[in-house]
Length: 367
Ligand SMILES: *Cc1c(COP(=O)(O)O)cnc(C)c1O
Image (tube, rainbow, N blue to C red):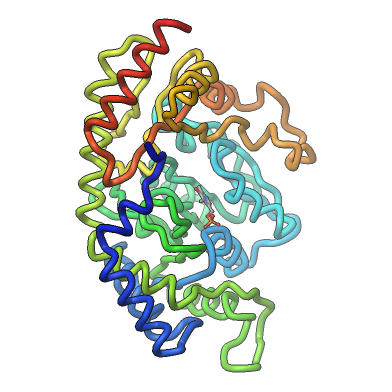
């Protein structure tokens, strides 16, 4: 059994993916070009925004967004301590300061009630993360941000395709950033990402920053990076995007199938889908008391699982300098000790899910 079965997906769309890749090779336009433009337009329309800007990774999508907002030394950015490190790494990378707010114990997303007291004159952005494939409460986050005129960047690296209040992830705040890392809800065959916004000025700046700060060839009004998306990756994504709406349904059905079965087992907390949300189950994550023993027990019988994430960011050595301690964010710390993710992808079979659930039931009785 695979945790995410990318080969099975490839076999399903092989013809279309191969033909996209060979078109790019035949055209010899490998960097940006028409495939990237087509993908940007299609995904922007899907997300309900004006502009999509293809970039090299989800991490670069976040860096470029912060750079376009002019964020640098002395600035503070409020975000969650319970996420992949990229979310706050980019803040520190630009010599700004991550300021963490604890999470909601059910959705694992930033708790909007904990944001306002953290706002200072130095707060220059808020980055909520739509973790595991469910949007953060962006209505509440945007409302606080609007009150203080602070831009919001949704880290939607796990939530492309999800919706909140009938609007799609990446189109819910000023800026949305997603990743096309292979195992994300829509993944390419390498690294890739995209920034989404409807703001003309920001979109222009982001495009410049993404390509060495140039507005035309060899003219550089601002400092940028090499953050471009490859044409071959765009081709792969164009082929996969045709099937994406179906895959979202398959993911949701698989998630609900797990939940129905796992809810019958004592001591397992299944994912809570908050009001107005849909879930794309980038990860299907449960909470249990004896997490490490369960992970080991599954491993012994060949069932893969993963822990997203075992150590909250405020307790990572890289962020020691921020001065947080154990106990600074009790909800994030508690969840980090109990959470684990199960095999999940659009092509998972019910028989495989039954095997996972059966094994969890057996192991929990023994440990
Ligand atoms: C994957 C991920 C990123 C980074 O994306 P890359 O494409 O790997 O750089 C950022 N934030 C979150 C929440 C992620 O899951």
